[in-house]
Amino acid sequence: MSRAPEYNRDEVIHKAMQVFWARGYGRTSVTDLVTATGLKPGSLYAAFGNKQGLFVAALEHYGKRFKKRIQQLAETDRSALGVIRTLLITIADEALQTGHQRGCLAVNSLLELASHEPDIARHLEAHNEEMLQVITRLVEQAQAQGDIRAERNARALSAFLLNNIWGMQVMCKSRPNRAAMAAIIDGILVSLTAT
Image (tube, rainbow, N blue to C red):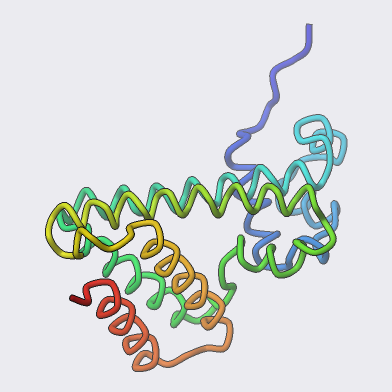
């Protein structure tokens, strides 16, 4: 009978996510992950199989955090368009804070890995589809609330919105100013609510 792990799996994944996010997949060594998580290499391999397995777990954790953020925003604002606006403002605010110019883990990883790591690329595609579904539900809710025209294609609008969220997170790596980020947010919202 095997012993139960003596660590918190979610905490280990969160710490690994932070390392992958800061350093990128290719620049993250097993030593970096051991240092960050406090686990021995054998424990990491036993729990996740390899570095790629831990990365996939970290990416899933990242996606859960995004969905949780939207859920928390929805609990404080009944307007789906308000949730979208607040999400965009939050992304901009985080980008403007010192030390938060990491961009988006999923986009960073897609740019780094998609062309030469097909297994990871498939996980990233699944992650992006899941995020698109989350955003589509918000857009459909905004349409039902009358804030976005109902005859507009919700999935196409959601792809536009998600692409702009990714773009904002890439742009944050260049240390943008508040006025530029506010103008981008205004442009996104005008495009979503155009009549």
